[in-house]
Amino acid sequence: MKTVVTTLMAVAVLVLLAVPAVADWKEGDPYKWYQPPDLTDTGIDIYNVCPKILADDFLCTSPIPITDVHFWGSWKDDEVGVIQLVHLSIHSNVPPDDQIPWSRPGQLLWQRDFWPGEFIVKGPIDSPGEDWLNTNTGEYLPDNHNLAWQINIPHIEDPFVQEGTPDRPIIYWLDICVVVEGGEWGWKTSTEQWMDDAVWSDDGVNWYPLKHPETHKSLDLAFVITPEPGTISLLVLGGVAVLLRRRRK
Image 1 (cartoon, rainbow, N blue to C red):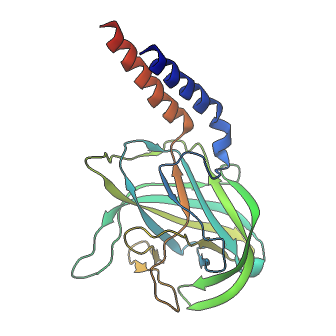
Image 2: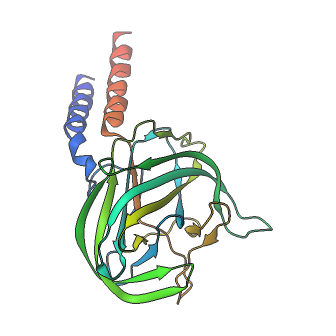
């Protein structure tokens, strides 16, 4: 028993020490949901400047606040502008029905705007030969750009608290659009595909599935959702406390 408690406490200390590292998320860091970016010549960046909204679904199996969000994107023609604002929202899930045969965001559950200083732009990252797609105009430009950026939004105040559990998982949707000065920004596709297509909208009401413009295959988007490392530490320390109480009985 002593060995178990000592091990758990050591893990908690290590997690606490790792808190600063999660601001710039990297491979190997903890996460609740991860759809890795496609940084190869099969990747596509989808135009995502407000009011153009892109959204993708994810599964929650534990009721932990979403305090960090990270996503990837690129600039059309590698003509780099400045991101002035990132708008995030989280919605409930509307499954396919007789009227609309694809799942899509439903009720707005949480939203927030993030200004410079509240997000971190990391890059450039090499992503040679990536494509560009504007779903409104149908503009599709193969081999358009060679650089990518990771946008990190750490330590979200008043975060959305998920309600899913292992016995009762819940599907949510993460929606993103950005405001930029100069250039055209796009959210990057992922190498992974989960459930239904990602979707796009101009008004947040009417949603359309994202498909590859040539192959018509389903497209998903690249993002990471992570709990605050301190939250993980509290969970571990809580486990230690429970073990200690049981030991005293």
